[in-house]
Length: 266
Image 1 (cartoon, rainbow, N blue to C red):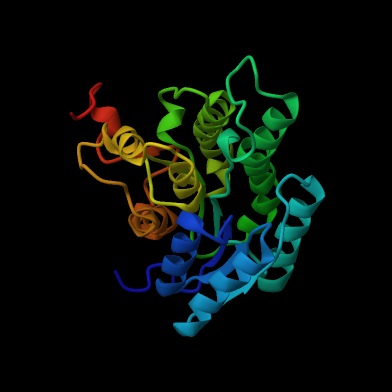
Image 2 (image 1 turned 90 degrees about the vertical axis):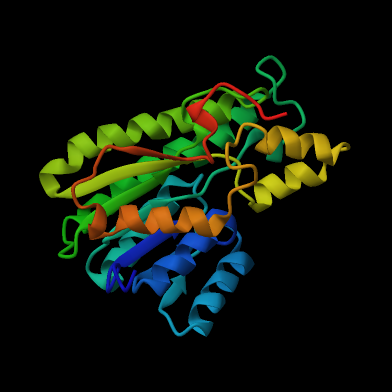
């Protein structure tokens, strides 16, 4: 693949673990100047350490994505430091099952809705809004890469706000592509299926019948396994690079074939 992100200033939110961490490491390997942000400082610094250990460039800036002022300050700091932002990868997300055991529409508290909405959707909009003035300065091809979900297309039980926000990310991606085309800023998203991340592993660990849960998680995958964060990272880097220079407003499904059919493997 070579250094197809050579010299690009790349911000990755939620890069302390999971898909964000894998994407940050892969972007650095492909030549990006990676800025990692996460609310968990220890996790973010650990990702930086992993990148530096490989001889690549990375730094960490903590950011609470529920705080609009913090998002604006993050983009300002990166823009002031580098003079531009080339890639914004909006990866961070939360799921209501991480926050409460009352996740049905009729039981879930207003506070849970607010948290998931603020991190999963509002923060994506605010990050784009405050990054754009610096992305206009890019000379290497500016690209926004958002993380949506298969839940952008189909609903899952006990995940009303997650699905609503991920559907919002899907359409925000298209709207941003329209509005930002005049500035030569591309905007795409990808939609993962069940990926081996800390979020999923926490859900799996809490299950009483782990075989049954694994069957549920992978049963709709035509490729009969969980996806790996490193597989997601390759797609994120493609969408961030000039290899995808004629692609904008697109939603790439990376789900092991889940949405290709309406079935579940026995």
